[in-house]
Image (cartoon, rainbow, N blue to C red; front, side):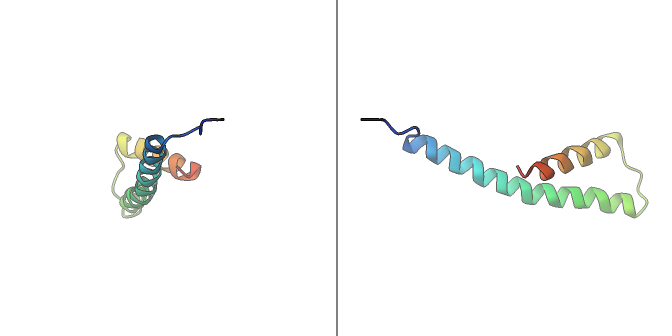
Length: 64
């Protein structure tokens, strides 16, 4: 008899990761929008803002 590939604990952990990814996707979109608004209203972006925009954009594009 074959054993299942995932046990209940593993499935539970995967579900937590999925939920965290969904939360991050929502928050990541909000953070990206906030950074873009600052840029549109004329606020100079700091180097870390530019880096954050690039990172958030790539994560959202990947659909994490």
